[in-house]
Amino acid sequence: MKIVTMLKDVVRSLVKRPFTRPYPREKQPAPERLRGKLHYNPEKCTGCCLCSMECPANALELITLDKKEKRFVMRYHLDRCTYCAQCVQNCRFGCLEMSPAEWELAAASKEPFTIYYGNEEDVATVLAKHTGTDAEPPG
Image (cartoon, rainbow, N blue to C red; front, side, top):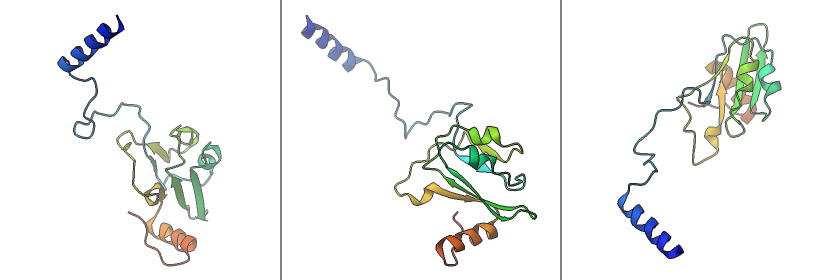
């Protein structure tokens, strides 16, 4: 009895098309409320650090260069992020948003998983302090 059932399944799978989709060749549109890569708007930021304090994965670091002039650099650790959007919900000033279009974030090396957001000169300053040399900002 079990062999007959198995043979039926084999014949049925030879005739019918598979239910899977050829993903890399045929991309499906992303769902509306998909939480993808985090984006930061430094012009709106006041440096309250609620985003980094409330992040359960410690994926965000807000580096303050000059609070009076509103010079901040956000270090976003993409490999730590759980995409819970708690940082977006806690931001009172609307500086953070998660992009539903950018969700294919796999990479072969670990370097692209740390992203610096902010003014280019400020990012270069932070990178120079971090590496001890005059580094170029990523991107």
